[in-house]
Image (cartoon, rainbow, N blue to C red):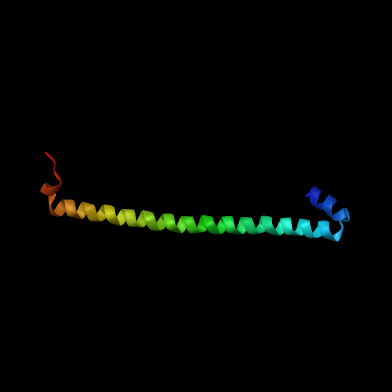
Length: 73
C-alpha cells in the first residue's frame, strides 16, 4: 500500500507511465489466464475421474457376469 502511495506522489513522464500501466495490465492478464487454465484443468480432471469411475463399475459388472474368465492359472 505504501508503494502505491509513493508511486502516486512521484511524477513520471508519459513513457514511464505507459510502461508501468502495460506491466500492470500484463500482470493482470497473466493472472486471468492462469485462473482460466486452473478452471479448465479442474473440469478436465473431474471428467477423467468420472470416466474412470464408470470404467471401474463396468469392469466390476463384467467380472460378476463371467467370474471364471478373469482367473489366471
